[in-house]
Length: 234
Image (cartoon, rainbow, N blue to C red):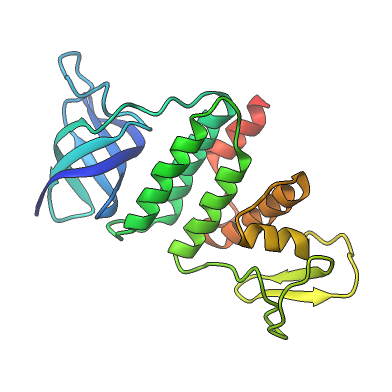
């Protein structure tokens, strides 16, 4: 199989042998793929500067296995300029995609969502809402989307002034009181997340806590390296 000029982003790169790289790549039409980029670490290579995270690329490759050969790469636009917390957030997105996406499982809509999130992270201020919405849409794309607007037991609409217990793989069930349990959430926060309008600190905190719980089922107990690094720097 030979694929030419596919829109893509580098998610992760690591050294391979003396002059090559192993690349995890997010492509628009073929999902996450792994490529060998031969000779690109040599001083004479013209591709070294392109094979970086957050650079829109057009890549061509060939092969029929899980690990294929990069044939060519060219720029597909200006690199995204991420700084400070936004840069850490970009690395978090990349590591998250490497961890949860199966190889060669196409998600063209997710590619668009990723591109849009990088645009939001280019600003001068950290946009936490962008991360939470990316996580929410990622779960939806993978078939693990959350029902944030209805009680899964009664099927009644979630009420903003009530509290709800989260049951992974099922949804939210109304409870009588707020017990301070990490699995309990205020209805107001759930509705804000459902409408993608996280305008206050409480809703943002609850959305972050909820996504940590929901993503654990996909990630397992091992913490993300980018999350550890962010915590250490802070």
